[in-house]
Image 1 (cartoon, rainbow, N blue to C red):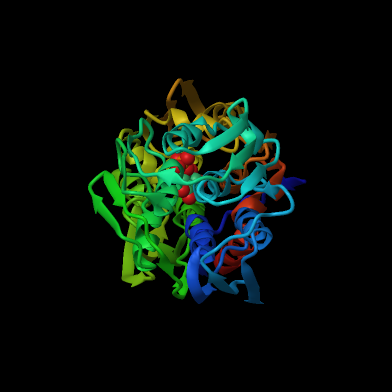
Image 2: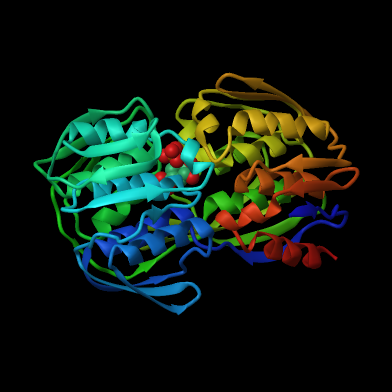
Amino acid sequence: MLKTVRIINKGLKGDITIPADKSISHRAVMFSAIAHGECQINNFSSGADCHSTLNIFKHLGTDIRFIDEKTLIINSNGKLKPSEVALDAGNSGTTTRLISGILAGQNFDSVIIGDNSLSKRPMKRIIEPLSLMGAKIESTNGCVPLKIYGTQLNGIEYSSQLSSAQVKSCILLAGLNASGKTTYHEPFLSRNHTEILLHYLGADIRVNKNSVIVYPSELTAKDIDVVGDISSAAFFIAAGLIVPNSSFVIKNVGINPTRSGIIDVVKRMQGEIYIRNTREVSGEQCADIMVCYTNNLKGCTIEGEDIPRLIDELPIIAVLASQAYGQTIVKNAEDLRNKESDRINCLVRELSKIGINITETPDGFVIEGKTKIKGDAELESYHDHRLAMSFYVAGLIAEKEIAINGFEWTNISFPEFEKLFAKLIAGGN
Ligand code: S3P
């Protein structure tokens, strides 16, 4: 689908509520499916990725019922059954990597398949540590399809080279069902939703800085309220800062410190952002965020421990940085090349088409601001939801219209994206 973006002159105003966090929605279903008892999950993500996870657990025999579009009941005796069909993870790396940790320790075999993009993403990062635990996994050149031969696993101590929450979660989930303790170390702290939710559901899990220990544990089902997704809010935060005359509130945003790098970067860039009404929801921190147009944003350097805290926000940060004075440098983000697309190369290629001064580096990019966004171009989304949404935000302030090819890929994480922008645009008129 080719989407032409409307250019906004009058600012974005009003308030919006951000839909459910994708990472937490995946985990809510997976962990409830292996927990004992019945629970209700409120505010579940309507994105296609989380529905891939839901469908997989239906095939694995979990009793899942919807009360309404975003509320579901899961009832489980803690056990999964073999699926009669291959488990289709669609576009979702999180689904694939996390369920591999669960399936490797079952007493049955499973096959995981996915779409073209998922079939190119690296799975050795989970196969290697799972194999050290005794898992038997066949891959297709290190990618899906994966054939997982369920077996009894043993706990390990593992130091990962990557700061990846998907790898960490995979090993912790395998550790729940292994013999003995499992210890996982990572260079920088990646998102810790797995640790928080496993603790909330009663697992014996202990965290010390960048290390986690999990003991074999049974989980007890408990109702889960999913907070709003800061990675979705990021598009609105950026738009509020760069569309002149904007000021609005984004409600119910998860601000877990392992995810809130975008807020720190905006502050470093001297953007007007205010965090209000901070509260805790199912173990996660949540707040309302007010954002206002800022004419004098400053470029900054983003590197090291920042990266896992804003890995999914780097495409929209590139658009934001194009409207900041001076240079913005992103380093140590080479894993961006392994996302739904090669996000470094695709971002640089497409943003260059609309006049943004962006240069590719092996592990990131450099942007020279402040540039006018020329528009009058068709941008390719490469079937990548976050690229499509980032280009949309650039289009709001372009001099001439931008069209985005493959805009429907936004449904992977955020089907409500355009509707929420329409609300803020109407508020500005
Ligand atoms: C996720 C972890 C991150 C992130 C992805 C979701 C998760 O991936 O990019 O969108 O839910 O654990 P990596 O762990 O591969 O960095």
